[in-house]
Amino acid sequence: KLYTNPIMGHEGTNTIGIIITLQDVTQIRKLERIKSEFVANVSHELKTPLTSIKGFIETLKEGAVKDENTALKFLNIIDYEAERLTNLITDILVLSELENKKEKTAQEKFSIETSIDEVIMIFKSQAEKKNIKIEKNIEEDIGFLFGPRDKFKQMIINLIDNAIKYSGENSKVMIEALVEDERKVISIQDFGIGIPEGSIPRIFERFYRVDKARSKAIYGGTGLGLSIVKHIAISFGAEISVESQPGKGTKFKIKFPLVRKES
Ligand code: ADP
Image (cartoon, rainbow, N blue to C red; front, side):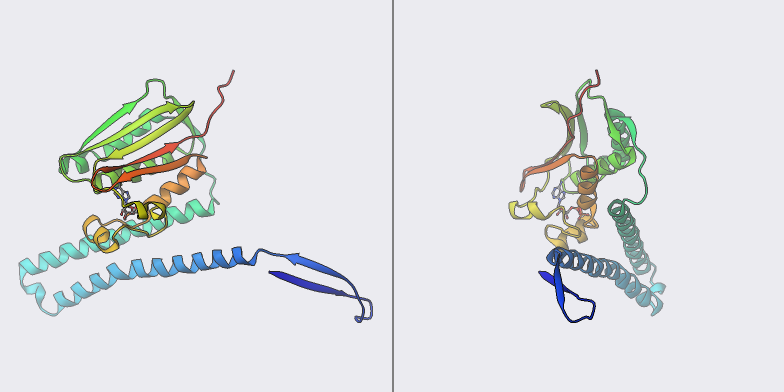
């Protein structure tokens, strides 16, 4: 859209020139729309567990508390919903911190293998519960990366968390760190439910879930995990890609930028 600002002469009568201000209003409108959609989504996502918590508390107060079995069942649901709220708020804070980029993140040289090992440790018991093996294949001289180490770990955490979440029992999650065309590539592969082709372009969107109701009920995710992954990958200057086949599994690949060897 164009805005024209006529510049008036001394008497305010004669137009002596025209300044044309070119502004990409469509872009601003789009950003405004995305922002208000996000606020609406956040409100909805926060309200759902709260409504459920309030509902079960009401029922308990109205007498269900007297039946110990029912009371315990309801308390477990309240506990689960409260945990979901906590996870959601944590993810929203992480995402907004990444988007604001106000805080200076610590840039450091860190070992890829050590960081991956630390993340694998976090998932030990979660994987054991489903009898899922976490295997790794790390190139011997994969070396180091430069950037915020905690963010790197967060990215791997979110991807392994999904890999375990969207796999059945007695399965495997494979973590690789290899050098391809002189670039360091880290991949996380599972042999789980996979992602339908039509959904792949949307999975990095905030709050997008394949089969929303089922994802939330069974897997309990926030729908923000992959948006966080995307943001972190971008901040490292890395490219992220996905290969997936429903019923066969999914592979996420993060390709880090080429670093010239110091001579
Ligand atoms: P969520 O918290 O719901 O897992 P994410 O942003 O991490 O949200 O992922 C978005 C959606 O992408 C998920 O709801 C799920 O449907 C799909 N998805 C992500 N990772 C995988 C995977 N490894 N296998 C199958 N589906 C996945």
